[in-house]
Image (cartoon, rainbow, N blue to C red; front, side):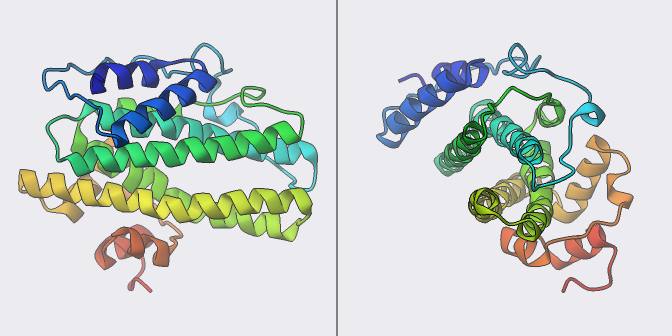
Length: 272
């Protein structure tokens, strides 16, 4: 199969069911070594997200946030919010596996595996939405993750911003949500908790993959990883490096963050 053209169609596919079914077929072929790389492939232009025509897009401040986790409405808002993150993450992983060429095969193995994880996460959350009589697309969404993809067209900045910053932030946000669910526990919230536990565990692996390829590219360009990481964050998200972050230290260490990076981000004197 033609790796790049087939994968590009999947990234741009607007229908979620078709995107997922086509990816599963593609990934099966890839694992069975039926892929043919085109080293002259020119990546598509990032214009609009693949969901542009079927989701209701609003500004981030206009997206509903759950106030209570003990009502169906609150559960739907929570699930829809996380489902959109996971759906967007499918395209992010696929674009990473498509846009950047002439890298070791292990790079493409990693990001297609991440995409496969994100598909599974989305399907779990979509299934829970359906149990509540809702569906993905019922509520408004924002395009923050797509904008991050659009603003990082090179491998170095993409690995710094998407897995090592945005997805790494999930290592803190996910446990906070789980804590709130535990304080409002019922049979359905336990189902959400079970899904979030899987997502959190696999997020650590995704950040680790991003860390590996960020450092790979730093080494290839002769750059200092810690200094370069901070420079990229400040360029893409001005002011982000002056904030004080409450970090999941254990998870970030496991994912490859250095003690100096953790001290800088948390504005603390140690990384414990």
